[in-house]
Length: 224
Image (cartoon, rainbow, N blue to C red; front, side, top):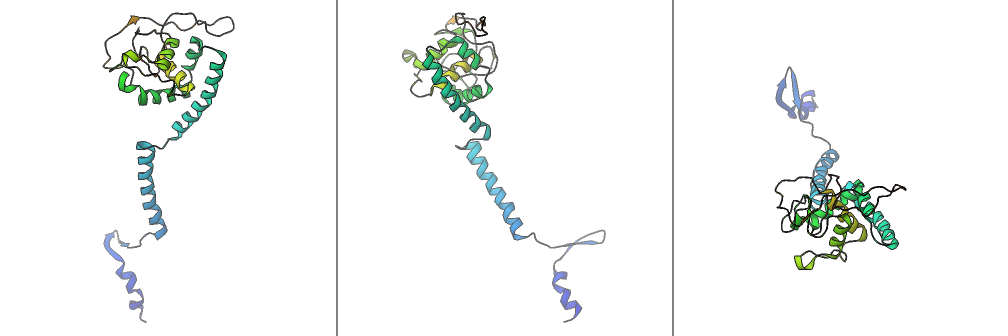
């Protein structure tokens, strides 16, 4: 076989692209590499649809779910000791994991009536200092738990776990004074909130008047 015939197949794979005397050669990528490339694109599309648009939980969401289950056990212990106190709920507002889960809960269960940011819609505005059923966190907890049937507010105690009820009430308090846009006009009685005053043991006193902590972080809602 002549040298010209031996190298003819390679000559056929040379492309016309030529730059500075260097000619481009048609050398397809290995099949396994192409398979992985297209497979990663298909996987990425599935991942986005399932985890960002579907039922899949992102890492932080799965973490918050696990933490909420842990707090659920704590909540049951709180309830076993007696009534939920103002100090108990107020301390929860500083728990980032619990408030993050409560925010998601609020936006999925409460936003239709109270707005995504608590600004009010069918239900009252949760971000001002006016409350229809008491502005203390214990009042909000009672409202979320028992509902206000004559006002269309559902009782959530049979639909939410104990920790979720606590988280919702605490989160509702954090919405106060966040000043979101498109706020509904004030309704109810003006009740500026004062956080519980720590006693000698460092725990908060539970006899203070008010209706939601001065933290400006976020919240879950009942009719106010």
